[in-house]
Length: 424
Image: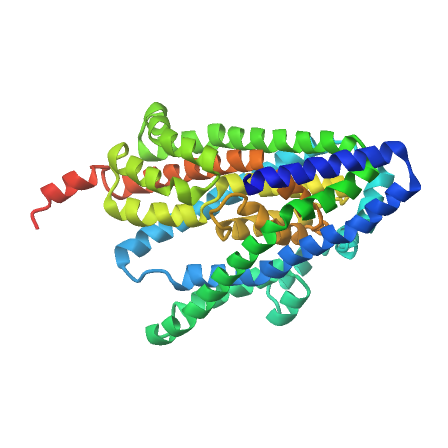
């Protein structure tokens, strides 16, 4: 039995028992739901304790480990610019489409207040109604004390510090830089190992989160989750069809049919495995044989894209944050929306390329929007189907980026032909 199946069973069991409790209205059963609730909080706290070291170390390593080769830097720079712009558009699209769409979910005000009260981060949710001015928000982006920002869970300022430190390390003498980078590598690897251990307990944690939710909301909880899954899947499909495919065709000079044929094998792997890294070998082969891209594009840009480029995750993470804001009755003003989008842009670039990897980094996004992080466990429990669509959109965007950059950097001749014609 896979971990995804176990989490789904835990979610279904929690929802079913919670709905039963809401219908029977027995005092002792409500006491049982209240007794189970701390288990879910412990599960969420366990995930939260890995987020800051994981995000910080991944960002620092990703920037400071950049190659010094001139051609690779040129390809990587163009790729990173394209990644950031695409993810920003994906998250912005999801906010604009998700807020009115998620607003159709009817959540009773008393139920939302009860959920907020039960959340351990209720002070963050309450703070969302007192959002700072734009000038104050911009000033707060640069932390006066990075350790204080980490202690208070101020993710966006901490991300700014991590980016600055990563860029600063690229200017440090190589011998000293290579002495410190393994430390951040080790921290990132250790946090991923810790996350895997925590996810072993996910079925219990998801059950403990779903049960009190359903006990408060009744049958409306199941309907809201089905609606969320459908919207994430639809959002990923619309973004791929409306943005990614036309951009790939216009930017590379390929026909839509040619690009679709090249991307199809990797899409099949991505949809079934829910892993960008598992799809990488198929993407590299299709880029060489079907798109005729150069070796430096297939050997560097595609692995970089598989590790960092998460256009589908940007859609899913933003939709998830908007859904939880609606569920908990947290208003999203312009400053909160901007914080969510900017945090999605940065955190999606550092999410691990494993099944449900991107949902693990939704915690800082929720914190940026003043949304209780307890909802992350609920999303994790229903993440199998959304993750299939997110990952498929991710690798479609990866292939599009390789096609656009590869074709524009050179005329698009296959790598083998380019070597044969080189007089050297």
